[in-house]
Image 1 (cartoon, rainbow, N blue to C red):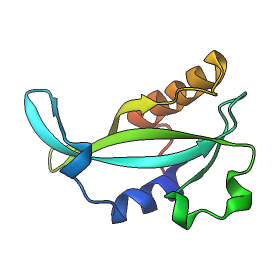
Image 2 (cartoon, rainbow, N blue to C red):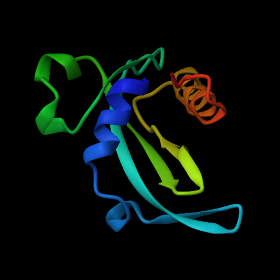
Image 3 (cartoon, one colour):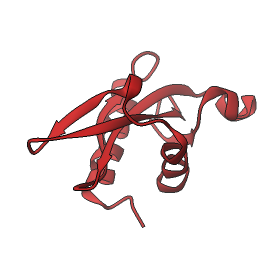
Image 4 (cartoon, rainbow, N blue to C red):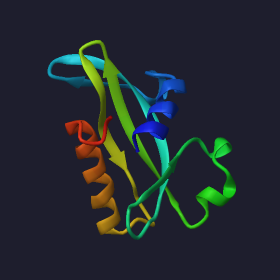
Length: 109
């Protein structure tokens, strides 16, 4: 998850449509990382915008979003996971656990 999500966030515009979030009393700009995962298992397959992800890489997957915040006093922190239909409840739980692990630093190298 680390490398492709980090690369995607590096080229996304922060603020704008993704807005801002307050963490510990400070306001941070946000960006959205669009990803594709198995809708039954929640296994993340690839991150990227639709025009940049090969069609074959998206086949059989479903789109989800991680909204991330960052700033001088905050490492990149995922503040929201959006994964609706067709994800199963179990798959959404896996994506949310991935978000928690990222924020805890266990998914970073």
